[in-house]
Every structure is written in C-alpha cells, then in structure tokens.
Length: 277
Ligand SMILES: NC(=O)c1ccc[n+]([C@@H]2O[C@H](COP(=O)([O-])OP(=O)(O)OC[C@H]3O[C@@H](n4cnc5c(N)ncnc54)[C@H](OP(=O)(O)O)[C@@H]3O)[C@@H](O)[C@H]2O)c1
Image (cartoon, rainbow, N blue to C red):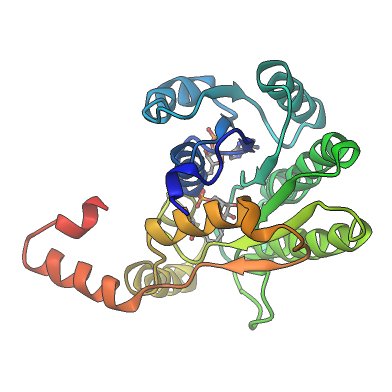
C-alpha cells in the first residue's frame, strides 16, 4: 500500500509536535493522508510550524497551544479536535522534556517534577482523554513515545528523572493495554531510538563526569542514530490498519549503521547530501 494513502480520512493528535520527533511524526501522518492536530506549550512555535504541515494535499491540520502536564488543557485539545474533525482515531503521546544530565541529588527538584508531570502525567492525561472518546466507538490507536529507561537494558545513569518517567510510561502502556485487551483498541509504545533533537543536544551536564559521558552520547547520536525515514515509516505503520488486533506491543526504530557511516563519510568529504534527508 502507498504511504500517501494509508491514513486517508483518519484524525490524529500528536502532542509536542513543533520540533524533533513529534514534528516528523505529524508530517508523516499528514503525508499519509490523515488530518493532524499538533501542539506545544508555545503558541509562537505552533504558528511558526503551521506552514510546514500544510504542504500535504490530502490532509488538513490544526495547531493548538497545549501543556500536556495540565489535564484541563489536554481535555481542551481533544475537544478542539472533535469540534474541528468530529473524531479521533490516533493519539500519539509524544511531548517530553529533559534538561539535565547528572547524579540524582544534583538534579533540581523542580526539574524532577517537570519531567514527571510532562513525560508521565502528560502520557496519562492524553491516554485518558483518548480512551474516553475511543472506547464508545471501539476503535482507535494510542501510541506512547518511550525511550531511555523503558527497556530492560542496564540502568541509564545520570537520567534519573527522564529514565524513571519513561520506565513508568512503558509499564503504564502495558497495563492499560491489558485493561482494554477485550476491545478493538490498540495501545502501543514506540521507542524511536537515538536521534539528534533539542532533547538530546541541549541537555546540560551537571558535573565533569557528565561532560565526559556526554561525549559518549555524541558518539551515539552520530553512529547509532535512527534515520528520519525509519521514524516516518514506523509511525505511519503503527498508526495504520497494520496494527489492527495488536495491543500492548512496543515498537522500535533501529539505527541503520551503513547509512550513518555514509553520512559520516559525506560530512568528511565536505558534502551535506545525506544531511538533507
Ligand atoms: N531524541 C531522542 O533520541 C529520543 C529517543 C527516545 C525517545 N524519545 C522520545 O521522543 C519524544 C520526542 O522527543 P524529541 O527528542 O523530539 O524532543 P524535542 O525535540 O525536545 O521536542 C519536544 C516537543 O515537545 C514539546 N513539549 C515539551 N513539553 C511539553 C508540554 N508540557 N506540553 C506540550 N508540549 C510539550 C516541545 O515544544 P515546547 O517546548 O514549545 O512545548 C517540542 O515540540 C519524547 O517522548 C522523547 O522522550 C526521543
């Protein structure tokens, strides 16, 4: 099936979608024919990004200012979507924050709270409003973005707040999927893999050891990065009928090591051809 027609007539909400992975997901759903509602906490960012999402002839888009940490604002996001498009078929809980990298005691308590309120409670808020609309129709996909902390790999040190929020979001996704296993809803996780965004490149090290470890993160962002194409394809596939009958599953994007090496070589040779994908 053509990517451009896989989501025709569907209505999708993507939280935290004015940059990074959320913006890639919002664009990919619009390119696949879905009507898309995108949001962030900043009305300026929403206005600035709007033209990038209007290039897709089979899709209509709406931008909304919404802080996912506030349940009332998330309810409003759903209401505005229903007013404009009449239904919600797909809901991506993508919005997340993480500003610091360092030992737990050095992370400001206010930051811990912001991370949990956004990454975990934001996912809870989005899931609640989506469920309320989707359950009576017995139809819909809720997709929660996971990440470091949400795997069985060794503990992600220096990321206490972020890794805890994602580990809890993973468990939440799996539990809610079990709660509604008898329905036709798909409640899924998406772990997009490492990708250079504001979240991964604007992070502040809290001590010298954190500075050293961030060099390892930089290496990962160069060599182990996921491609935007992998994120696009995976997002559309799991939002589409391809996951009908599937719930409680975590999907992953894996790095394409050969492309990463070619991009590195292209940069070394002064060409940015591969950077433009
Ligand atoms: N990048 C990676 O390597 C990676 C790896 C694994 C998982 N992930 C996950 O992928 C998702 C996207 O991350 P990203 O790397 O693309 O981050 P990003 O570039 O920092 O983008 C985050 C987006 O969320 C918005 N946002 C932040 N807090 C919000 C809130 N309270 N309410 C509404 N919107 C909010 C931001 O806009 P405003 O600031 O204007 O609100 C922005 O549009 C996250 O769930 C992240 O955990 C990322």
